[in-house]
Amino acid sequence: MGNLIIRKATVEDAKGKGYVHYQSWIETYTGLFPEEYMQSLTLEKSVKLATDYPENTFVAIVDDQIIGFTCYLESRDEDLEDTGEIMAIYILKEYQGIGIGKKLMEACYKELSKYSKLSLWVLGCNMKSVGFYERQGFIADGNTKMLHGKEVIRMIKNSE
Image 1 (cartoon, rainbow, N blue to C red):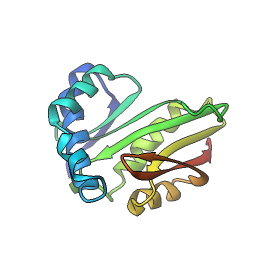
Image 2 (image 1 turned 45 degrees about the horizontal axis):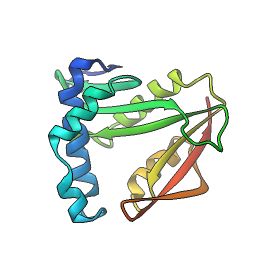
Image 3 (image 1 turned 60 degrees about the vertical axis):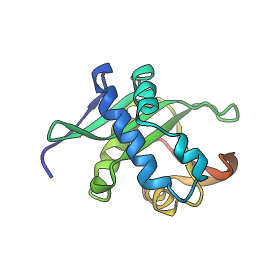
């Protein structure tokens, strides 16, 4: 692996961020979400989403290529006060398991340090991601919701 750079995203990063978002969904969720939903995903939709929402995002770059990103904001959950939220983290499969996710999360932790707690939502049957978040100190709090017919669980941790 070349040199890793973690930095705030810019509008110019939309194409690379969109690619990571799209490709990560294909690599991670094929077989977990209904096939008709997976077939509705397109690279163009992911790039448009990245273009429309460039803020509150960190990108991970290796050899001038975006290979991962994470997004954060104030929690959208009405039952949580003083809580920041990790809204998304995606890393291309070939770059997973080597510490990039942890570094992206740490960048978000700094941005969300004014909050006493952090939250995130994760697909309950995605044990690899659940395990990653548990190693980061997140614990399932019992709240769930449905996403495309699958249970998503909320995880919480005290801010560092």
